[in-house]
Image (cartoon, rainbow, N blue to C red; front, side):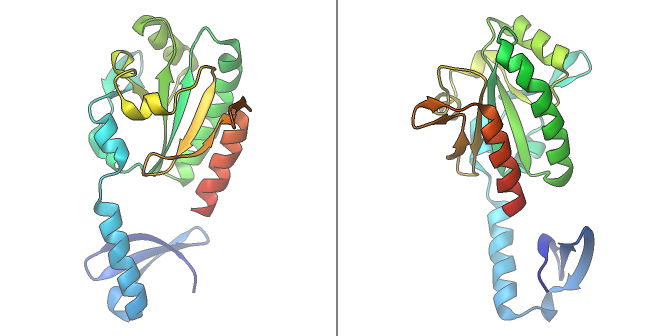
Length: 199
């Protein structure tokens, strides 16, 4: 049987197949499968690069105010996309609602995925107004921290909107720039859907 490994706890493992989950005794699996599961458990226990980069650096919108994004939730995120954008940018305003719709759909199926908004607005108030106006559901880098974070600087480009898909080591899988040429965020959004489905 082929299925997705969802959890391993105590003497049993949980698999997912065709939208249903199944608990199965660990002892009934082959030695090769038990080793795979042990490696998987160790991999899940390792903190991702995003925890060290963004610990206490993210906020999320709750109603009309901002709260710190909980580190426990950040630990769950293995695949992350950076969204460089601003309220003054017309193409950003056109794309952001599409990204939000896709994000809500993807989050339902892939809870280990996250988008992090990185503002190119003029000041914290403009950033807050943009997030509130669009009802952004994803966390954002604190305005005064965006230029201090190495990973954020590494994947920044001159033009926006810029969407960058990163693996759990922080390396770019897909970006709005290909060989220095701007191809836009919709190409990355397609790559996100494909990558999550395959991984």
